[in-house]
Length: 305
Ligand SMILES: [Zn+2]
Image 1 (spheres, rainbow, N blue to C red):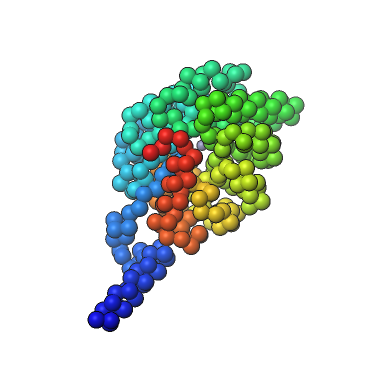
Image 2 (cartoon, rainbow, N blue to C red):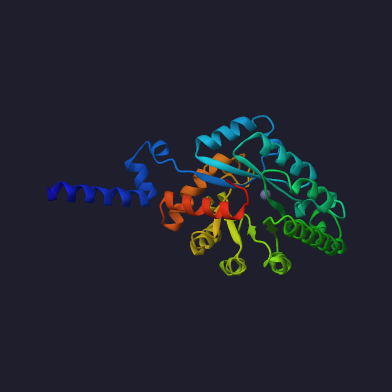
């Protein structure tokens, strides 16, 4: 009687080990896509982008078929925020974040709060953003003068603070964008609100040291398909150092499609590729990754079921 039991426990241990090594599991179970399907969330996608106008139903269907059971579509100005709320009303697995992107401040009113306030309380709005700072494309880098850079930066900071205040008012967390040399400015503004709300520093590409500062404030990071890029080693290093539970997964669709779709339109279904890469980097099973990233998202986005 002892032998079959030992055989069974030995077999179980081998299967567990195989499960933990995703590549081996896929070799062992050629139908892994079907048999091992595990759910993930896309915590950051721009589904209102014109790229999705012609086939949004197909995009959502493919995501669902790939086990991506929740998607947060992110507004970047008044119009896209409005459409994000609409989209969330149309698809039961889509939620909305509403905000004004720092790259779009030229078109913003001096006070974005009245417009965003109309949307912030709508059902299925789970966060404010994306907001933040972007020093990558300052006026001087696109035909303007250097003197225009400082007013532009200060306008971004102004609108960022307004959205942090709005988030406090509506008891929501914030989705933060940072690009270019703006991390110090971003975190020094956010720090003043960190006792009242949490942030996700999305599409994280900063140093491990900066990531630790975010964690110290009780906030999170999220990782995109850059994890799969040849030149994404610094992002893989950050993920390696990030404790489970402190990060979420996202596509930033239609941008940043993971390998093998790099350069093409990205869509939420590709979270499965990002997750496979993340599990390999973390040396954890897909089930464990699913459980910790989905739980982090549920705790972060109020109202995400
Ligand atoms: Zn985005």
